[in-house]
Length: 105
Image (cartoon, rainbow, N blue to C red; front, side):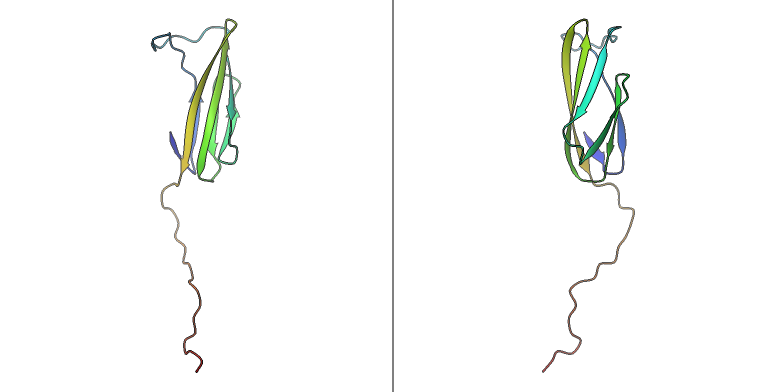
């Protein structure tokens, strides 16, 4: 997913059966989230099966990995987040290289 550099998103897991149909989460389900690029995404694992991925301002890519355990089985899920520039909100005047008004002769 793309995420603007000034945004965050809540992450939740979705349990499915073997052919992809949604099913309720097992009663003993536990999910742990991790992030391979904290320079781009600040990940907060809420400890309740959800997490918040917040862009820190740097553009780039972070891979979020989730490990879910239930009934003695462990399954994995991944989400790639690409942090992109946000909307234009500010304007700066940028000076070029100075040059002489009247060149030396």
